[in-house]
Length: 101
Image 1 (tube, rainbow, N blue to C red):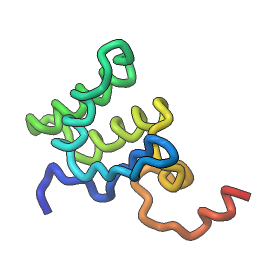
Image 2: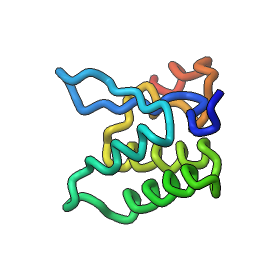
Image 3: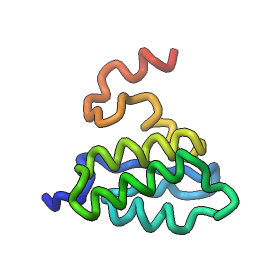
Image 4: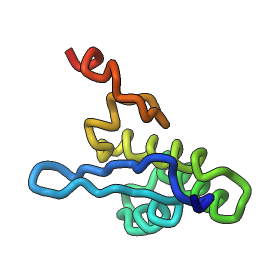
């Protein structure tokens, strides 16, 4: 596996009527962040951008960058609901339904 690919995708949802977008790597996260509107670039955006840049230059792991990007997606309310129920980096979906009761 490429060191810049995420262990699991970050699922971005722009709302009903839009397909869920899966961000699978640091490079894809960086492209997404570069398209983000300038007027909406705050500290969480900057943190995610810095972490992705650090991962691309080998100063941080792809999973650390994924966590920062996931935090950005959660704060901006773009994180798909299925991802919001799981702990960051979790592949195990058992118990998810108990959280949503």
